[in-house]
Length: 110
Image (cartoon, rainbow, N blue to C red; front, side, top):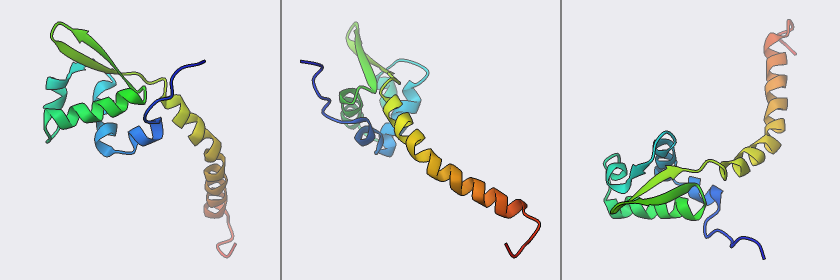
């Protein structure tokens, strides 16, 4: 039957600047929500809601340690964004190559 469908996809999850900051914060270390919320000018409840969306998209893993939940980045779902970007990068590369050619050409009227 396969895995259940995520409630939020990766693109929805990273659309919010706060969630992007959360991912950067959790990239290097696992943290409890009490520590995480100290990095943001919002309530612990608001931070928890953002973490839940990231978790539903598979970008954050949670584990229980004693009485607290600790969160860490799971970068695997970011591969979807990398693949999307790689597909469209060819359009940007053509524009950059044309600009480079124009800038480096000897004829200013070209």
